[in-house]
Image (cartoon, rainbow, N blue to C red; front, top):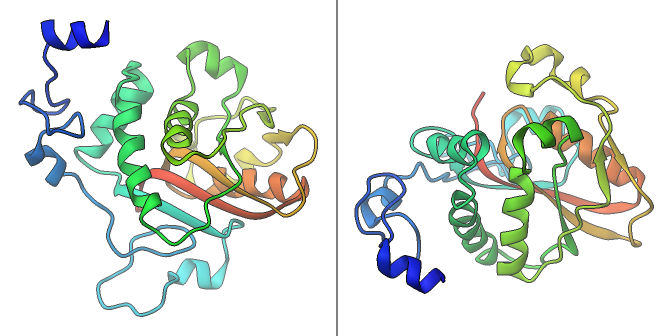
Length: 231
C-alpha cells in the first residue's frame, strides 16, 4: 500500500513541495537551509559563541542542569519551528520520522556508548486526550528503531496537569514542574537512559524528569532533543 500510494501520489518536500532528496522528506535545498546547531554546550546543548574553548556554557558552569549531557540537532527557528509545530499542533505525524532520522544520524556519529533505553517525556492524560498522541513518543519510537535502543514508555508518568512551559513566565517554570513526574518501579543498576523530547527551552522539564529518574536508580541521564531554543 505504501508503494502504491507513492506511485499515485509522489512524495514532495514537506517545506517547499519540490521533489525530495533520496533519503529524507525534504529537498536538498530545504535540507541545507535547516538551522543546524553547530558548536554547543555538551551538557545543555545551548549554542556556544564562536571561539569558545570550554565545552560548557557559562550557565552550566554556574549551575549544572541536573542531567549529564544533551544532544540537539537544530536551532528552534525557521523553518525547524514550522516542522515541529506541524507535528505537535497539527498532528502531521509524518514529520516525526523525518526529524528523528536526522537526529539519529547525529547520535550515531558520536562516540559510543548508546543508552540502555529511551524515555520519551510523558504527557498528562488530559493533554494526551486533547492531542491524541505524544510527539516525544513518536520521535522516540523512530529513534529506537534506527539506533536499536529499546523505548521505555511505561516507566515514567506525568502526575500533574501543569500549565504549558511556553505560557509560563521564565522565573516560574521550575516551580511549575516540581513534582510533575513519577517513576513506577526501579531502574536497572547503573542504568544509562536518554530522555527524548522535541524542543528544549529552559531545560526545566528535562531536569525535573532527570531528578526523579536518578531517585529511581539512573546513573547517567542524557537528553536528546530535535531543537534547542536560545531563550
